Image (cartoon, rainbow over all chains, first blue to last red; front, side, top):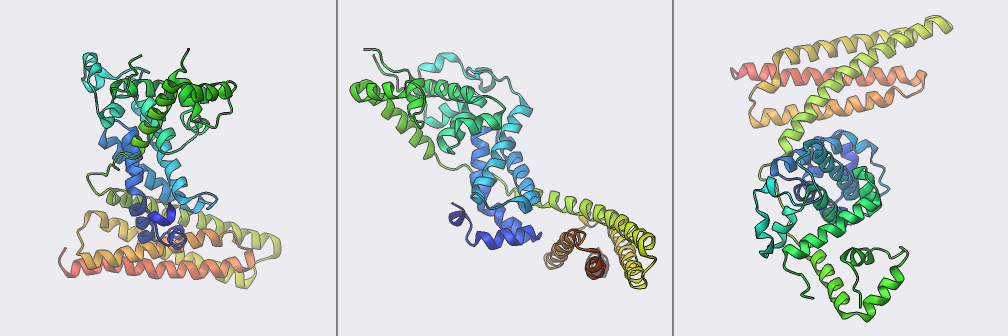
Length: 178
Length: 199
């Protein structure tokens, strides 16, 4: 993915390590969309996601000297972004429950039977459940990795994922009639 | 027939090392309903992955760059302070261990002078408060290039602190002189050019 997002990644990283601002901006331009997308899928508001994007790249620019090139550059940036997004969730501490966040979204439980599109259903999950779904199913993190980032157990991550899929199935109208 | 729970089906997508996974897999092979449910799960995940990428409404690089510039200024002050302590310690050590070697003392004195000049220029720039001024695009580009070069010199100064003592003084002197030259140019860009156009 590095070479797809950033041509000549090695040279850009070397220049970024030396403090070359054009190289740091090139890193930002290469990864800003996937980082923002990850942040926006996890955070409740666009403003929070923008803050996460800024914090992620401030950290990337400060720490690029410590990037050891053992994994992919995108993997390294993504882990910083995921940590920042989860930190933002912990800081905001909306009324987090394992259940619906109707009070926050202003939606009523009565519309449960309505078929939603996937975007709306994802948005309606609790922040923790949405984060687990996105990190596991889309970004490909394991339950162990998610548990470490969240400061929880792998079992917590597994149960959040399963319960989230029960909700999604229900809201997407995919219930099995039997 | 008892069907698998969605939790069991979600777990089946994993590597399948949990106790009971083999039984669950066998069940899926035999049970068309559970197989369909697993297929719906796979499709849902595929649809999640295919959701369009969301993009920020505004360019977020300028605030990141502004924070980086502020951080660099703080770092420059810190480096100047640490380098001053290091030089003082180095001079004291040279005197205690082997008496003041003329070459070391001369180099250290030259470094101190370069550092003092660099700090004076930092002070002049700070009083001018360049962040609050408006520069034309070309001048801003020149200032940015100089800032980048100063950042590189600061990085090399940090590295030079790790060198053996014999080569360290000469390297530090070279870098501090380079830094003074760049700071001079930066002050010139901000103060002199701006006053030329009446800003």
